[in-house]
Length: 108
Length: 216
Image 1 (cartoon, each protein chain N blue to C red):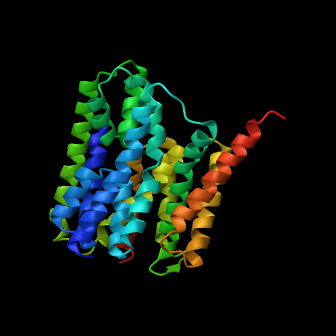
Image 2: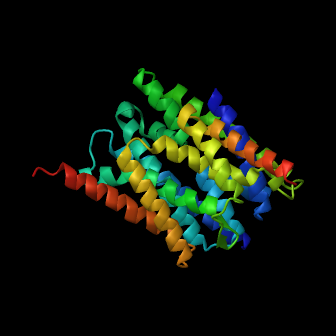
Image 3: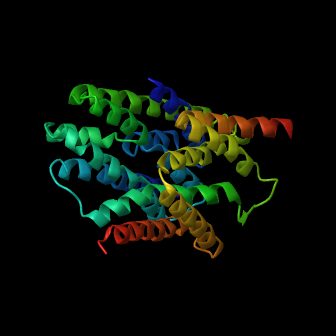
């Protein structure tokens, strides 16, 4: 990708990241959104994270790897347990990466 | 500040991956300064590596970061007496982690703008520093697999998703969205599967919730 294209993409990303963070804090200091919009926004986080997670675990290169040899899938179990029990983003990432690194080291 | 401890290694992983995706050190650090959104940055890096269309990268960033709208809305009442420039500064650095910290602080009545913004600045500094170190190391690390840096993003999704699931409806909508996303990808919508699945699933969730609340 060309240098300018990358910089324009970064600027676009900055804008679409900033506006959702800014507008509610700015506008809602003394107002409320319609009920359906609030309900919709409440379901966006779970929906988008789930839509990102499953392909990130299953897609390897250009195909879906749904087998016992998929390390990403196995490592999701201890990582998920840490997230569920400890409610820790950092702990989950560290445990997930540790499990993947150790298994790769053993199987190399 | 356990939050800072979390920012450094994830920022480092982002930096290494960004360099390996073909970004320069300047672009890598610039993204951490002007975008400042951990999961969105890691996603963007993987999209840059696949040479995905810029509009799709921006749209994905938007939808991934839409969740901050709710956080921003939730904190809004606590900023009633803040000056507009303070709200603008604060919002720029609103992340999942800083939201967690500030919602607890605000509930305790600790909502002074100066200390709140200072905490945010320290957090972003840690993130930018981690990115820079990762970007510099990225030129030395050609293979990220032995360090499992490629697993930073899936692990982050796992944590953020599980922290968001608060009831059965959330779980069902998450499963529908995940399934839809995979099916759409399989059908060939490899650039837009996440966005389409999210819009359908969130609309379904909101529809069911609004319909259930209607007086019969």
